[in-house]
Image 1 (tube, one colour):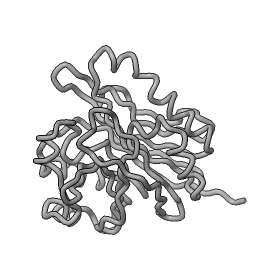
Image 2 (image 1 turned 180 degrees about the vertical axis):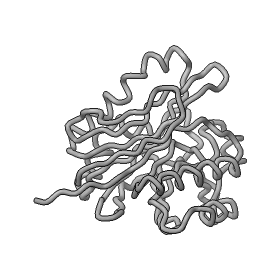
Image 3 (image 1 turned 120 degrees about the vertical axis):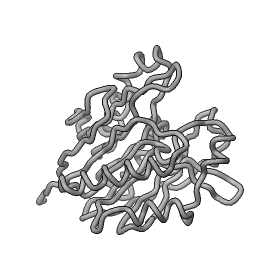
Image 4 (image 1 turned 90 degrees about the vertical axis):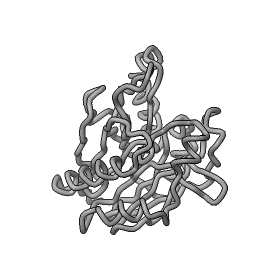
Length: 246
């Protein structure tokens, strides 16, 4: 069977809380950078557009419908022939909310994946129940959001539906002692998902500080063997661009 390579990108960003306009500018800038680097896909951290804050007041104030003016402004700002964008955001669903990832193609939202395995602190969100796969330039991929990656079935179903890449949007802003304890465990868990399924895994995470918490990353590309092929330096913003074989 013939193989070919496809270039992908992942953003390791500082948090932006409650400023969709600023976050949109960062998204547009990094999408442009990834396009110039020849990437076909770029992913962003969990709930990046509004900031991952699990407080009902924040969620109610910041949640956006995919039909909102703010989303339309972001889409219009993306470059022509943009890479596919996987963007974490807080989604308004009528009277409900979801921790979602928008799959953006050709300046339109093609689909939304909604986090299926919610943490106790995420009680304000409605859990998703679907594991769809999406295509870009012959590459089929699915999405997990942060805690989903702890559950083998969340990756297995995506693989069974033909995906070769698992995209993981994460936010590991944690108390500093917990962040230090977990800094090497995130990729260890993700590597297990790769070995179990034979998929590549591309993750995007935040970095920086918030009050007594710290986010170190990691933003990485992991091979089907479970080996970490590329990883951005911990605790530094950056853009990972790498090639995978399909």
